[in-house]
Length: 245
Image (cartoon, one colour):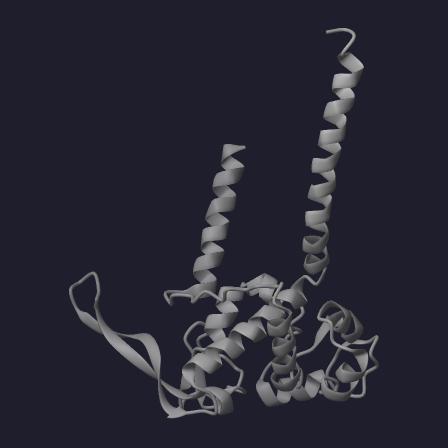
């Protein structure tokens, strides 16, 4: 048993290191009970992500019901490819065209928050920077040589990479990538963009496990029921054993 725990710990550590590298991941502060945040996140996802990335595991109707959005508003404002309200979130772009334009078919994002982690997503969405050597002119701190354009640049603005000197084992100094800084402002302030990305990641986290909302809602009722039954069983026990004791 101890060996299994050690192996799992090592694998988890290796996965965390591989996903984040040497870049510090910012905290997304996910709150699936914040319906307003989830609704705003749905808006950002539909407008900026769903044109290239599908989310086939989530139906529009499920999202509408969970987030308290009338079906009519979803159909009018959040559906752009002719899908029906009961359909999963698909895209009209053909996989062969996507591979030709981007070099790879953009992945389905249904489970991206579960596979990458909410903090990774949040940091990734904030970490694009200008890089003329890349096909779309941008790179990313947590996903080096990313093949995705910075589709949120109109909101965030443009950033450039910053570097710092680090000493290697031989005592030589090397310039290493350390962060980003804004060189051209976007439509949002830094705080507004942070909030927008919080909302988007909040929605993508919900999207990875929609049942969690219902499970959390029922959890309190189940615990209350168990507590009530404990009280009832306690008095039943006293009544049953009173003649014996």
